[in-house]
Image 1 (tube, rainbow, N blue to C red):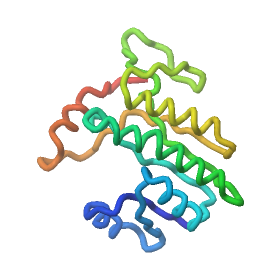
Image 2 (cartoon, rainbow, N blue to C red; image 1 turned 90 degrees about the vertical axis):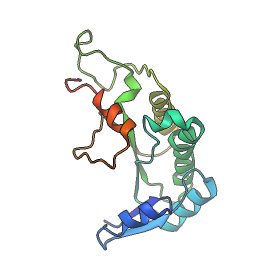
Image 3 (cartoon, rainbow, N blue to C red; image 1 turned 180 degrees about the horizontal axis):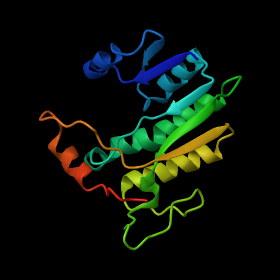
Length: 175
């Protein structure tokens, strides 16, 4: 399959892109700009879009406006652009277990299922619930993946101290 990776054109992303296999095409685009999204999707004519862009905790709490633009509004722009294609692509939305809100593993013993009601307890979870609703309301063939807590497997002194602190509160025995 032909893979087109998209991100903001900033030095850190250019450095990361240089490490990608030669078979991956990189297209720089700001997904918060609907015109840039339209251009990206129409020029690449994807068979599928895997939407991974997000402003995650704890950063979404510091830049709430930007987080909403990326987490909800960019999703809406991608969906509109995809629906406008002559052959609309499949849409894969990376969502989060945050849509369920805080779940104490000592008082909540049931396993999460697709029909477990959402109950976000923070803005990130609320954004993901909104984005999921947009995906479900689209005319596209879609798939929503609710990812669990994601932690780095490698730590270094260069890591953001707040991120390390945030990762330390993720439950190791969550369901």
